[in-house]
Image (cartoon, rainbow, N blue to C red; front, top):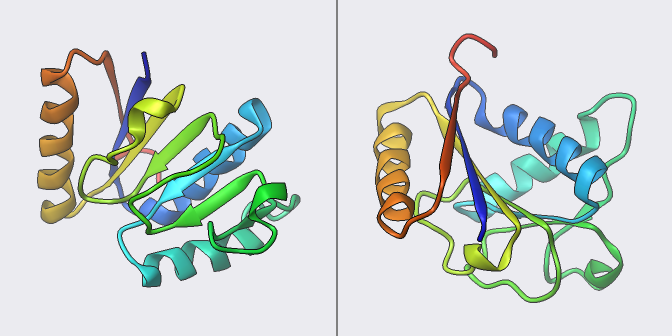
Length: 141
C-alpha cells in the first residue's frame, strides 16, 4: 500500500518540493511531480536548475522526447504512464493514479486555500484506509 506523507504549512512550497524531489531522487531513483498548472510546472522546472546548488537533478516534462531516459518528471497532466517510485503532489486534488506509487508526498502551503485543499486530501486518503504521516513545516522554512 502507498505510504503517504503530508508536509504542511510550507512558506515556500516549491522550494520544499525541490528539497523533497532531490532526496527522493537520491533514495529511490525515480520521481513524478504533479503540479496544478503549466505556470507551476515552469516555475518548478526553473527552480530545479538552481536547487540544490551543488547538484543537478535530471528532470523534464512527461511529453519530452527524453522522458523515457529521465528519472524526474514534472507535469500538470492528470495521467501517468511509466515507472516511478515517489509521487510529489502539488495539485489541489488527490492524483487519480497515486496508488501506483510506493510513496506519495503531499506538499501543502501555508495559505488558507492550500490548507483547506490539504485537509480535504487528508480526509480522502484516511477514509480509504491509508496510513498518513504529517510533518509541520511552519518552523523550518
